Image 1 (tube, rainbow, N blue to C red):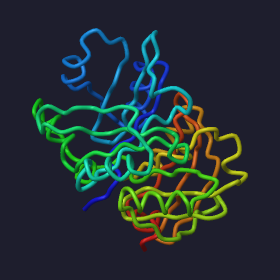
Image 2: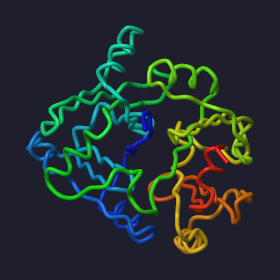
Image 3: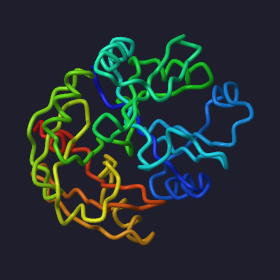
Length: 274
């Protein structure tokens, strides 16, 4: 099914520390595709991937143009045809700030800048990233990977109606109203797994990024909560769930990475589909 969320990129200061802590907390593993070294043999920046959908990027000493400002570098959306999305956005005056060529499927993916509602979205044709990685080793698409993994992402915007309208216009993403569970005043969501929250709210106070939360779907939420609390990250907000149990919002955690966790049984509820 497209459109759908497929991964997100976050700027980190210390890649070794970030991947170690996320591994300890969630069992996440990370790797660098050979394509990175092939295309950028002299680069000092670091890029890691994982089946869980998290892509940390550490700029090198010379910086990284598209990683400046908000540490949220990209929300990647699988679409039916990235070239069609490119054409629509260009017609509206939005040019990509970075184009990545994937040689195995022989296609481009396009990162657009913060002139689009202050959030960098990337358009990629469905399946092309998996095809590229699978040229080196097995790799599951996010939908097929086992939890824990990203279940959805929650973005905060001053005008979620305008943002949702443009995401429909350019990325074919449909939205419906859902209860934001105390995170904000209003919420819009969809089966594509991108949630939009309109603030302000006390829970989001101090959140400087457009990314309010990376929402991790987990097979043992209480164990994950205990591990996060033991690591020094306090629960900011508890959301009782109609499907049973709780979702927990922590806000900034490892190197500022904003997190919430929720149980598998609540997946549809979190998206407002239940």
